[in-house]
Length: 369
View 1 (tube, rainbow, N blue to C red):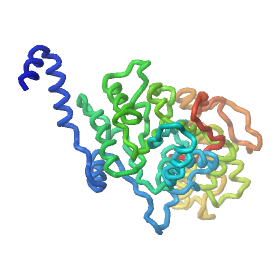
View 2: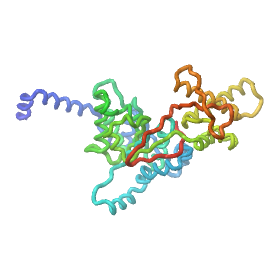
View 3: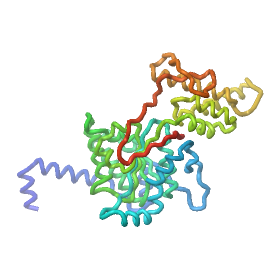
View 4: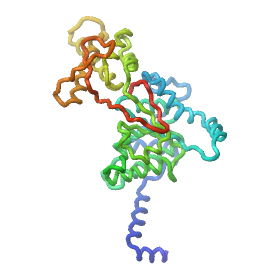
C-alpha cells in the first residue's frame, strides 16, 4: 500500500486514471447470474428477448422461412453459417478436428447488409427460432446515452447479460450508427463503442455462447477492423420481379396468378416492406369505400385497388429521389408490365459493392419489415 501511495504521489495523472477506471468498474452493472435475472436486466435496458416456440407447440408463421418470399438460396446460406452449427455443434467439431492442425471456433458473427426493408430483421428472428435459441433484440436507443461513458457501459452490460442467458443470438440493428469507421471523423463516444465491440467479438472478452447477428444498410461505413470480425457477410438485395410477385402472393392471396405476376413486374425498385405498405394501403382504401357505401361488390379489394396503391407508391418514390414536388421521371415499361405503370429512371435502391472473403449473395429478393 505504501508503495502504491508513493507511486501515486510521483505520477498524479496515473493515479487519476486508476481512480477513474475503478469508479467506472464499480458503476458498471454486474452480470446476471441466472437466466431469469438476465431476462429481467435486459428488459430493464430496453432490449427485447424473444424465446423460441416450446417443444410441441405450434410455431408462428413469423418463425418460418415461408415468411420470406423468394429467399430459398438465402435460407441455405443462413442455415449453413448460423443455424446448423448451433443445432449440431458436435458434428462440426468432429469435422474441424479432422481438417485443422490447431484452433477452435468461437460462435459465429454474421453481418446482414442491404437496402432497408429486405428482411434482415426477419431472417435473424427465423434463424434464432430454427436453432431453438432465444433472440435478444437491442434497439439503438437502448444503448445510447447523453452521459459520458454510459453508452459503452450499456453495450458491455448487454453482452454480459446475454451471457447470463447461456447460448443465445444477439441482434444489433443499424450497426453503422452504433460504431462508424475510424478512417472518418467520429466522436469519442462512437470510438469507445467500437472498442467494446472489437473486444467482445474477437478478443480477451469474447463470449463463446453468444452468436452476434448485426444488420446495416451502409456496409461501407463500417470500420475495417470491425468488418473483419464477421465470419460471414450475407447480402440482402432488393427483390427482383419473380420475388416481388411472391411477396404480393403473401399479402394479396385472393388475386389471380396473372394479376400477381403483373404487379410483380410493375413494382420495380420497391422492397418487401414497400410492397407490404402497398397492400395495406389498398386494403384500407377498399374498407373505407365499403363503409361509405361507394361500392356494392366483393368484400375483398380487386386488382385495380392494388394498381392504384402501387402507382401512388412509385410516384412517391420518384419524388423522394428527384426532390419534393418533382414529377416522376418517365420510364420504359418492363417486359410483361401492363399499361398504366411508369418505371422511374432512378430508384432509391443502389447496387451494393462487391464483397470479398466469406460473403454470400442471394439472387432473389425477400420480404422484410
